[in-house]
Image 1 (cartoon, rainbow, N blue to C red):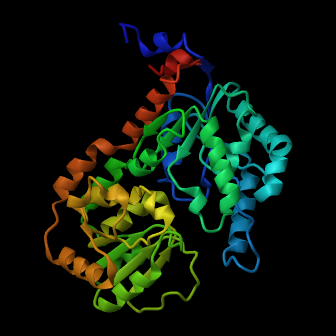
Image 2 (image 1 turned 30 degrees about the vertical axis):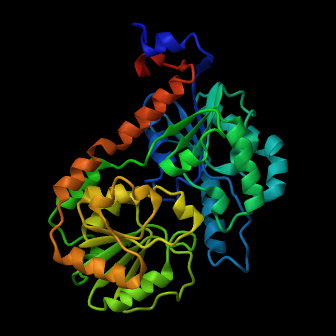
Image 3 (image 1 turned 120 degrees about the vertical axis):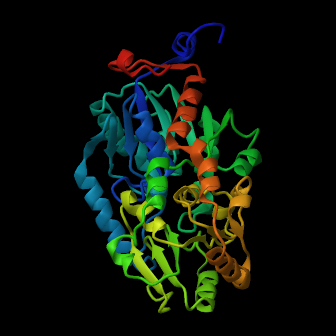
Length: 408
């Protein structure tokens, strides 16, 4: 950089910012905190104020068609009741009142934006970089006098089965045109959209290295609700949802392996009676801080994905978490496995999948090699890539206590 520091070089660029407003894709108070936007924003908040806006709805819950209707309404009301919360460092979380769908789009300008702006001011943010993950946040671009717009394209939201693909498609197309930078987690999706956006950045998912590696090395039977279960244990950790998970495949595999204890750790949006097999235990959702211990309590970890457009565009965070904890992995195929296939067993169909689990249980797993491969993949390293990319837009951080939080 011609001998200049990053701050000196970029101070001559397009402008200064004093924090980040992130229109998230999840709810901080409810969802697994391993998600990309949670992890990146928490780390950026060590250097500058960040307001994380809990996901604004992409679809209206149905009383008749949504078995989780009341749960979703109740958790949304709980989030709203919290107001603006300074969670840690300069990381703030806010749940605005929002309306999904076309009506919500019309109300966004005069009802949603002012709420977020007031919350941002409380966090000390007046000249933000606007980061948008949830597509409904597209209508907020330009509402805060932001110096730049970044789009997080880590999910193919238009393939979300509970959303309106036409509305989501329009929002995503507009956001891609407005964004100064689009951040991808899946290389193939980034390649597919090359030339359709101004600037691209690949940041694959990271991992909480210390926590997952340490948990994998512990000699423990696991948390209390799984500690008594017989071995061998095969675990799945994550949402059990129709747009990602393949219930037919899983049921066929679990029937074939009747002597194996399957443990399902996470919430489910499938019908309550979708699986009644005696060798399958459901634990429900667990705090993110406990996930590594549950993974470590398994002998094999699985990813029985379906072939949806969502999965084709995904880069599952649990892949690196599974490897960091040092347990063998059996998975269906998906594009983001490129570069990792030598560390996992890829299987298609119930017979192959069951056979792969049998082999994984019988053969030793090289945890040291897995650890070595995921070591450069920490969330700290991923956040640094993002921070540098923001500066590369010609911006500089100029917030409160800037010298103490130097970003160069």
